Picture (cartoon, rainbow, N blue to C red):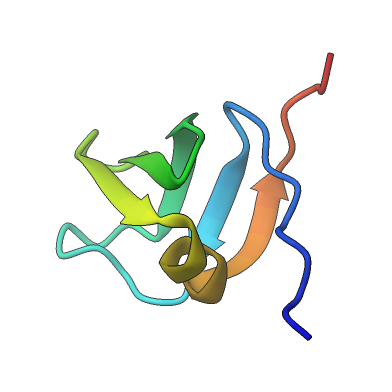
Length: 68
């Protein structure tokens, strides 16, 4: 039985398992859907990842956005 999807909100800040080539490992969620859009907080690069890949690569939540 697959795990339920992680609850994500716009502007959550996550730490990924691998570092970005710029050296940063913290990302802000900027798009939700089947693909998750994230923005590197070190260099502002934007990346799109399939939700399943994103959920495997997340290490922890640095901060959670207020869910309204």
